[in-house]
Amino acid sequence: MEGWYTLISFALGFLVAQLWKLVVGLITGHRTREVVNLRTAIGYFSRSGGMPSGHTASFTAASVYLGLVFGFGSGLFALAACTWMIVVYDAIHVRYAVGEQGKALNGLLRKAGKKELPLVEGHTLPQVVVGAIIGVMIAVGMFYMVGGA
Image (cartoon, rainbow, N blue to C red):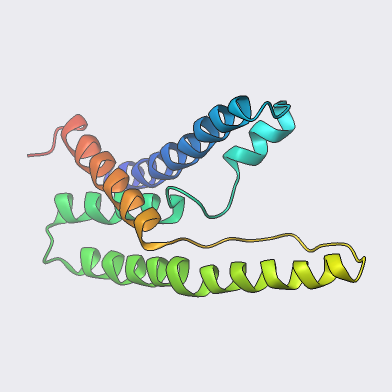
């Protein structure tokens, strides 16, 4: 069952982070009198980048849950931690840089009167830290909910 609980932890991490983005988007949209409909709500929920990092929340939740179940010295946790490091590095460095380059490119396209490209944003360090905190809370909650320790 640990495999299923790991997957549930992963999914909950992502879900909580994305719901945070939805709620903040709806509040911000209401304050700026933006027309909020189902399409914009789905856009807020499925947003890439921003606060908090859904990638970090989900991988942290799965990795910490595996550490709690199998031990933080286990090979399974080591593999999860290695994967976590790659995901977080990618979110902060690679995807963030690509997002910044996309903004610059879209600026040039706008000046040339061309259609802008879809933008994929990365994360800042604070966004990743908040995602990690969410992930740890979910992992610990899942661990105790299913009878751990």
